[in-house]
Amino acid sequence: MSFSDTNRTPCPSLGERSSVPTGRLAPSPTGAQHVGNARTYLIAWLSARSSGGRVVLRIEDIDSPRVKAGADRQAVEDLLWLGLDWDEGPIVQTRRMEEYASALAQLKKQEFVYPCTCTRGDVERAASAPHLEHEGPIYPGLCAENTVATAESLGDRPHCWRFRVPVESPSFVDGFAGPTQIDLRQVGGDFVVWKAPRPGVSESTPAYQLAVVVDDAAQGVTEVVRGDDLLASTPRQLLLYRALGLKPPSFVHVPLVVGVDGRRLAKRHGDTRLSSLREAGVRPQLLLGLLAWSCGWLPSIEPIAAQSLLPLFRLDSIPPAPFVLTPELLRTIGYG
Ligand code: GLU
Ligand code: ZN
Image 1: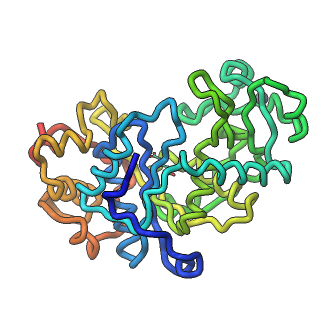
Image 2: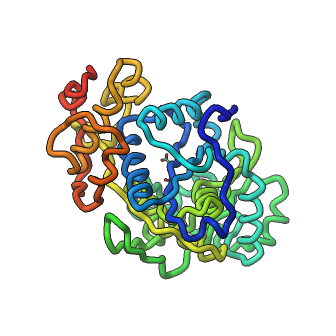
């Protein structure tokens, strides 16, 4: 894959960066980007740019069984179509395996992690407490007695590496959701930082939680703006920042876009892929107008460019409830 035709620029030196607020766009090429992703990217981009900040782009492609061919390039085209730009990147996670491996080695050195041989079935059978659906069951600690040295006696037995969650989970003040306290012992428990080899993936690979921390730190990110489905990832990432001796960014979790049934935007709600809107001839400025209206920046849906939204941007006008995208709204912007 080559991104040579996008606006790639070299990374500034660390010293140059440290004072500049930096936001990021981090698409996963596990599928097409849709209207919901566009809303989050717009908010993230405006938040960084309206404070004179930099924007970095990262392709989060380590979840290899789920990555779709060409979805990385498509995501870049979608962002450019929306009129969003960036100063650095794209950096591509699958090209940064050494960085993640060295972070894991650092965690091992200090016994922050332990090897776990449980299968998904083992965890599900042993976990009894109720759990948040998208967070999965609470890891019941079956392997928590293991130490880093145990891994040597495991031979060929596939194992992942889990971070040992402390009694007190870090609390934080979210830029949108406010003061947030999530007890990780009640949400997921000891979490995976490095995945075991799976069918179709012979290599063990870093988990999202570790890769995102290593990358946000390496790219000088000072502000993470993302969907509120990732709220419970933040205390995990704060633990990793602390364990790796890195300075954490601030976090802003914004409401998602849902369909009329109140569920997260997906295929069942019809085709809301940005590439489909583009092919149908929808003007990006009209989609931006719809999104800006949904965030309380415009009194009605009218075409507007991303740049023109800079003076109108504010977080506190965004309704806390998810934004319900209806077929009528899509028709308003000439789609469907
Ligand atoms: N790549 C993730 C996604 O597209 C975002 C992860 C993050 O923002 O930390 O959902
Ligand atoms: Zn285990």
